[in-house]
Image (tube, rainbow, N blue to C red; front, side, top):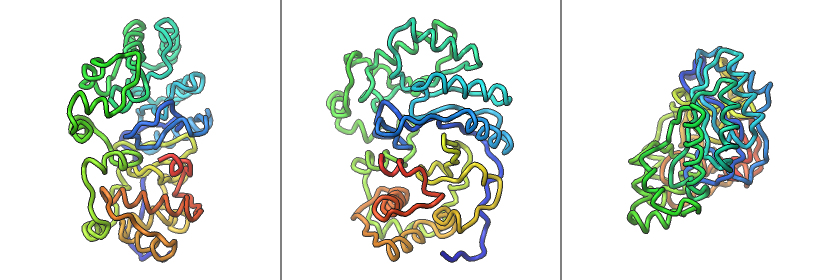
Length: 333
């Protein structure tokens, strides 16, 4: 690929973000940005990668992080190491995210949370949404909240606005989106993004395209002629268990930790460079001509089209590139 001399792609500071400990999850939520699911390998971030990720984050100016997944509580020993490592390196953990699937009973939950509190964890973000309730009975969520209160751990409910709606169903069972639409209106799914933050990437693109509407491929290309500058966004960054930094919350794109703080090589990161400089039009023209890509009729956004382009070259054409990682994302989205 040929690149003109233009603005350098360089990320040399970080504002706010966190670590992805694992992509393996008990759920396959319809809004999941990182396409987490039970189908992923049960890999978890190790101590060395945790330390290297946190040191890079700290060196780039960020001194507090959150911990998410996947489901971080699927490896309690690994999660404890993450919390201990952050504390030892002088980086504050704002919260750990959980879907509460690990809950069995109050006593065992209190024991788990007390162990983590003892090594420095103060706050748990507890996922509360219809998407999670499709996979996790609500009694587990309520049980984790109760256990947090019992051990003196703060609860960050994300988001509490859904509590009453979910609790109106039988809390011993799961409930799919059709049940929510039947009870709360046929436009329930369409209204969800107006009630809390959902990033339209990953699996959320397919979920919401059918209710929020789509545009013709050529219309998207015509209305998005510039480069994708959002790739430089560092307001809510993530590093994962493989040492990847995900630029601009664009799941399936990656920059290795060791290359952060330095100008990226266009030879090593051709897709990121193409998107940054030439945007979706540049990537579309390249993949259509070189990799036999045939677009669908309609897409929700340029991000939807971009994901389809990248899935094609990774899964259908067998392309491997440093900036198209991890492969399992494309297999699970």
